[in-house]
Length: 572
Image (cartoon, rainbow, N blue to C red):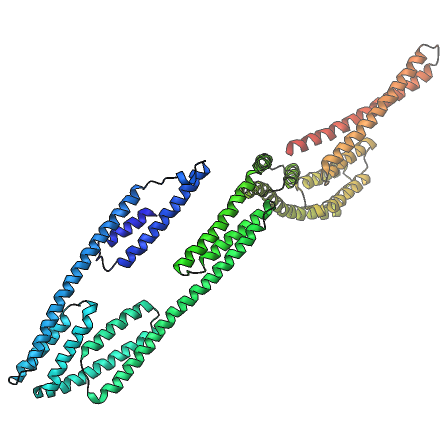
């Protein structure tokens, strides 16, 4: 900021010192404001580090020294410019006085009227081309000039024709000037209007006399336009004063609201502090839009408002100092939750990971925010990780559902075909075709959950019906039906659970058979120690053999079930 102000000042020094005075003063104020802000910041840092306010020293920076040097250079240039302007004005005054003296000499001429007229025109041109004089001398020297010219017009008869022409031209010029003055009433830039009105008044005085018959009316119109224009300028400055008064009232109202906000958080919790902070920051923004008041009131109200804000934020700082330990503990817990969520965000184990993330979300809710300013950033990270997974999960199932709908159409076609299928006399051919239906059905893939039970029940019921109609042996039929049963479980909504239950059921049945076999073995051992009873022992042995055969059958079925479970685990 200082470097930019120094650069602007260096650019201004390249221009005329008198023309940039206002700009230089504005830069000085802006630089002083920047320096004061740095001073206050450094002083506050010194006090915060344990220093005493009265012991604080603030050394000038290289930028401060450079800026002061440039100001000194400007002041020197300004003095030189003022001296130069004063000398030029003094020189112009002498030239104008000489022109007046020469015009007065022309009023004594009685011969060579043409030469006198030409000389007068030359002197008038010279008068217009001569630079300005001191404002203190302008009125008198202009009056002398006007009287000298009027003396020629009214005292020398040889100028009558010239006078009539000039009076007419002067009337036209002054009429045009009145029109120019009227346009100033529609100029929005008051400073520009003030500058132009001075120029136009000077031009009015320099134009010269008009016909006596028209002078009074023209003078009254000129005065009326001037009065109306000055009234507008006065109204503008009156409006500025009213605006300053309104700005003062607005600032005082903001101060009172700020004081109420500061008082409302004396025993408040963190959420209240944050709410009050937002309100106070909003007031600071509103303060910037209230406009300026008088310099005195502006400094006074700003000092009061800033003191309230500084006091509020100092108390807020003290309040949060006591929450640091709580913040750290909560922040640590939430950082761990974020790490876990981010570790899971790219997982494709949709069911398990979804449950894990929901548990993490529940844990997050059990650790609410204490008003820590970092909490929102932590939450954004946590939510981003969760959303990454759930958005991917949603996209996955949406694409899966589209594929499932296509599979459903395929299975509806297969169902129609198997419903229309008729068994032939060729058992082997029937068996192959039904096996083909099963293979085609399984290869068709999953269907939407809402249609799964309906279409699977329809297919497998029809398959069971066809197997019942086939002239198969009991064992072969049981084998086919068990295979169909496995396929139905695999296509169910909870395939793993159903397969586990079936495996458990078979294991229980095998255990019961083992129990019976042990009983039979015990009985057989008892009868072996007795004489006779060979037929009974043979009956027990046959039962044992039958149970073992049954157990072997069940064991094979359980192995099939467990193999399918293993495949499901690998796929997941």
